[in-house]
Structure formats: C-alpha cells, structure tokens
Image 1 (tube, helix red, strand yellow):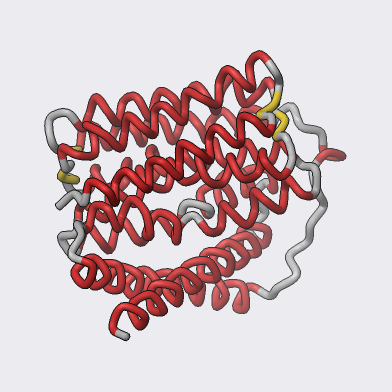
Image 2 (image 1 turned 90 degrees about the vertical axis):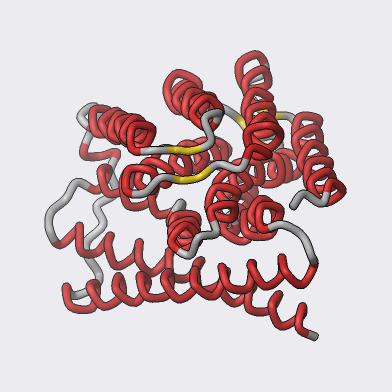
Length: 315
C-alpha cells in the first residue's frame, strides 16, 4: 500500500510538471508577444528551453535537498530515455527522417556536450568552470538560431497575435511556475521514498523512474510529431532536448553549486548515453532517416540498460 501511494504521488508530480511546463510556456509566450519579441526567437528560447523545465526543476530541487544522485541521474537518464525509448519507439511507429541542418549544428553540439560530460565527471564533481563552459555552449545555440532568424522571411513566420491580456498571461505563467515547483517537490519526495521502500539506490531511481517521468513531455510531443509525419520536428525535439538537458540544466546548476558525480555514472551510464548518441549518426548520415530496424536497436539497448541497472542493484 505504501509503495502504491508513493507511485501515485510520483504520477501526480509528473502530471504537475507536465501541465506546469505547458502553462508556463503559454503564459511566457503571450507576455513575449505583448512585448514585441520576435516569434522565431520565442520559439528558440521559450519553447526549446521549456521542454527541459521538468528536468531542470526536478534536478534543482534534488540538488538542494542533497539528492545529487537523483539530480544528475535524472539528466543522464532522461537523455538515455529520449534516444532509446522515445526515438526508438517513434522510429518503430514510422521511420524518422533527418535534415542536414541537424547534422551540421545541433547534433555535433549535442555530441560535444555529451563527451565533455564524461570528461568533466572524471574528477568526481561538476564545478563553476564546467558550468560556464556549458552556458557558453547554450549561448552559442541561441545565437545560431537568432542568426538563422535573419534569413527567415516574414511570410515564413506565423502571424500569431497575443490572445490573452497581459495580467492573464502573467497569471498563467506564474501558475505554471507554481505547478512546476510543487510538482518537482512531490516528485522528488516520492522518488526518494520509493528508493527506500524498494531498498535500491537513489541513483537507479533517478536514472529510470525520475528520468522517464520528466521525459513525458518529450515522449508525447515526439510521438505526435511522428504520427503527423513531421519527422524533422521529432528528431530535432530529441536532439535539442538532450543538448539543453546538459548545457542548460547542468550549466545553470553547476555554475551556482558544485554537482557531485557518483563514479557509477561515468563508469556505466554516461558511456551508454554516448553509445546511444553515436548510434543516431550512421543512420541519419548514410540513410537520411532512422528506419524501423534502427528504432528496434535503440529501444532494445534501452530495455537492456534498464534491466542491467536494476539487476546490478547499485547502492
């Protein structure tokens, strides 16, 4: 009964995180439109960074509460989940096409950030220097898309008008922020309690249940994009999310406070993340898409990985 209650609390926290992120983005989007900010820039910043808000708040609260294994495990586990589970399942539903722009910029930047995470982790902590490096990569990411916006004609941009008054937009954004804070608090408490009830480490919970819960927005949006035939959005969503999980979340967290690194993460989990990250390249480079067999491969690696960390029962 106690375990069931904690699982329900985890699910409730996940729902609050998902709805909170959506409402925060909606409110912030309306505020930005009222302020006359470029719509394309809004998309690059609010929408792109918004998909990482559940991971950010959960990792932040976990780090503040001293559960650094959940904090970093959530980020690494989410990246593994995004490629193995989400992209794998999406490709099984329908082969996911790639675009040259992703291979030219987003993917190399994501791969670089992932390799740097392994290198930075070897000394057992992510400090301010590592955080500043990641924030520099974040600014490079935003600058690149701001630069691309100059080549986009007015006809290519949607002509959305703010549908909400400024007071309502502010209330929606604040409501979303409150839901994110409450959801992350509930989520972390439930995750820690589940780990204790099952007698397993917080790291395993962070890499599996917490990572899956915070990746639900990406799962829903990516599968929806694939079903609608918007393959480039599906792949871009996963690549962009993995990139921002590292450069945005770890960039901010480690710039403010050192993030301890469990040796198990750089010995096993980050290498798995790198293997999955590298697996994307040959399919997209030589075939221009991730076929169903590729999706099956990614999904199989994810299932084996989850089975392995629970079989090891790491404490």
